Every structure is written in C-alpha cells, then in structure tokens.
Length: 362
Image (cartoon, rainbow, N blue to C red; front, side, top):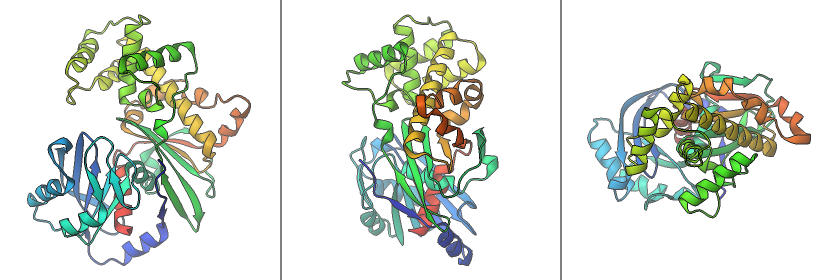
C-alpha cells in the first residue's frame, strides 16, 4: 500500500526554528509490533541540534494502546512536552495507522486530545529516515560510490534491519523535497542463481509460504534464514559451536533477547566460521541486487542511501564484498548506475532526526 505523500519544506522549517526563542520539548516515538521506544527530546536552534532528556523501551504487546504507554512514560518525567511525532513500521494514511503486527489503531487527532498535546504527527518509519537523510553531515556517511550528486534528481533510500524499508524523495524546487515511504520491502524476491533459488525454496517450505518477499532475505531475519538453508541443505557445514548454539537456542524459543544474526555477522567478520562467511556473502549480494533494482526504478542521481543497523555494523564486510559489482549487474542498462552516488548511513539516529524534523513542522 502506498503511503500518502508528505511535503518536506526545509527552508520553511529552518526559518521557523531560527525564529523560535524557546526550546521545544517533543516526544519522538519508534513504534513496532515487538517493542516501542519513547524519547523525550529538547530541540533548540535547529532540528538536528537536540538533547535526549529521557528514553524508555517498552514491550508493545503488554499495552492495549499507545496512550497508556505514553502516560506512564510522562509520569516518570517532570517535563511537559508540547508536541509528539511517532514513527510507525507500517503504512500511515491521513494521519491514521492500523499497525500490521499489533492490534493498535492510531489516530493523530485522538492521540493529541487524550495526551493533551498541541500537535501529534504519525509518520512511516522509513519516511522518517528519508527526512533524516536531509539533516546528515558528510562525517555521518560512508561513501561506496563517489560521484557528484545532482540537486534536481530523486534520492532513494533502503535499509535492512528487522525488516527491509524503502523510500524515495522527489525534488520540488527551492531545495524542497516530497517524501514517499513505500512498502517496497515486500516485493517478490528474485533469485539470481541456482543457490539463491534453493534458499528461497527452503524458506517457503520451512515457513509454509506461497511466496518469498525480498524482506525475507534482505533483513536480520534473512541472515538467519540463509544460514539455516545453507546448513539444512548441507551446502556448508556448521563449524563454530558458539554460533551454532546461538542459532539453535533461538530456533527453540525465538526469544528477542537472542540475536542469531548478530552472532553470524560477528563470526563472518572475524573469519572464524565458513558457514557464517558464506551466509553474509549471499546476504550482502542480495542486498546489493535489491539496491540496484531500486536505483533502476528511480534513477536516484541525487543519491542512494543505505540505512539500517546491519549495513553500518558490517561496513568492512560490505566494502570487501562484490557489492558494487552486483549493484551494477543489470545487463544492457548497467552503465546508468555508474552515476548514482551511494552512501551508507552511519548515524543510528537518522530516523529520530527525521521524526523531530517532521514533528516540528506539522
């Protein structure tokens, strides 16, 4: 489902912030089906200049709605916020959202009234990342393809984490952009080799699916699924007992406290486990192929930005891999991707920055 477009007016935003004589206290929320992170931030002269006053992570499933959670959060603080912006992992339409993996139905008007705030904004989590990109400095980026960005061209963003997010920005003149959050991570996964086809088939069989989305492969859950397929199909044997035990423990109880993807990527970086190394090789190349697919659709000569914690934490693996080669393996039109600037976002708070920007201007 395509999200309603959002208008980002950078110049207007900065003008409003510069004129503001007092700081603004804002609630910035990151809402997911498993956990919700609430932050109370103090914003001063510009949206990228903020201080976190408090932050608490909650189990989303233990609350019937967002309101009691926020009320509990604010009861622990002596600050009185004026505004709130909640980034949601799912579609936001007309400032309402029915969460995909949670029974909550959120309406910005209702939240504003029940929380007694001046304004409440709801934003797709990847739209928040898209806003945040415009507030990053060069030292918060790692360049993979160093070519000059075109100011009048689209910008594309994708990022693998728990899932796979994708979005894009279209310039509308005067330094302003129109931001679109998408559900592109749910398109069909397209295997590029017999091995990838076997992995896709294994995922279908194990998870009892009739199709595999690209998110099932290019994400944290995808790393684990690739590992399991290589192991179960006897393509590469397990040799690192620590990684093997972590994966088995997770398979037995699926506890959120166990992070098999992190264990796999760690072993791959340390080159201690051939199975983990092969897993990350396949993952990174699938990531690169999807980045290339996105780039072909939007021709983002304004820049392609790779967000999400996985890329930043596995920077060395990506730089040592065939990422750029696979990114540009697009047959007769491969050369059009030579002019796409590619950067990995290093700042883990890019979504928070975007939420603050949007929340202050809406």
